[in-house]
Length: 387
Image (spheres, rainbow, N blue to C red):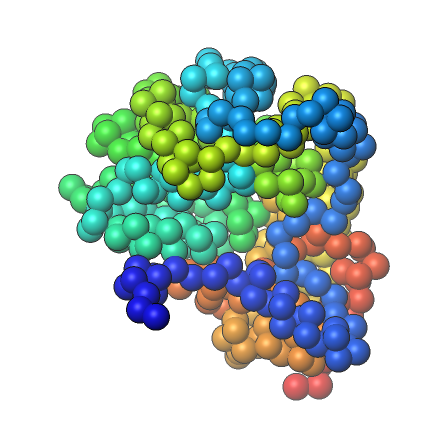
């Protein structure tokens, strides 16, 4: 069988690759502590599950509109308008099976062969993967620890060319937990507006901030016409398996996204969309409780890692990851994750998987219990001391 050349441009998401290796070791009897997957270890709130059950009983098991059910699109527009103070309507919303299609559809719709797209480095690996798959050229935008893993606006400006057709930002950020300030976002918005460049803003961790308030690039003048906001329910409501995401964008892009949905997915699960309306409009106590627990874990793991010789990490402002500096160990990031898995029984992700700037770091997800986080750190400290 002959495959299209473009298939060589796709990369797998390394979290799932590492998890498969860990599962194999577990099948052989080894106890593995999982710190690799970006998934809350909480159950979906009961009110959301109940809404799905009621929708099933009401017969919501058939095709729906490609862009999402009217009630769901309206609920998203109202939520986001209230959340960030920008007046979105249902006509600005597309609902997709998970949030990744918003990313891939935006890239498909906006990039021609050879067009450049600025991507955060380190950053979510699928950004570069989908840009390359669609024939675009990813241009890395370095995020450095000495700058709290925020972008350097002057560096961003220097990378803008006539071929730049899209800028991707992610705040709160995966894998570092860094957050772009309001000033950072305003500077990006000014560059985008002055050059008429769309911005894909991945805001999937918008509710996962430990101090301060969330800031969206959509709030700035001119950005409602240029911003593609990516969001969903997986992280905030522990709904990773439900596969429902959404995007807010200019109306003309909605039409193209809906066409892509029709051709590729038909529609998003109808009864799940009813559950998502409940997620947005129902009680938020479970979200608050989850974030309280995540903050405890963050504070614990940052303090504990910084007591391990040769390791260090900054305190993440959002999401649920720590990006651990391993440079003093003398190992590269992939060697270090192999060491963690095989010698310590800990599954984590190499920073190099997130881009060239991620080399020298390892991502730990603290979506795990404090007891397991404590044991993981104890194992690392003990095993490192014997090398």
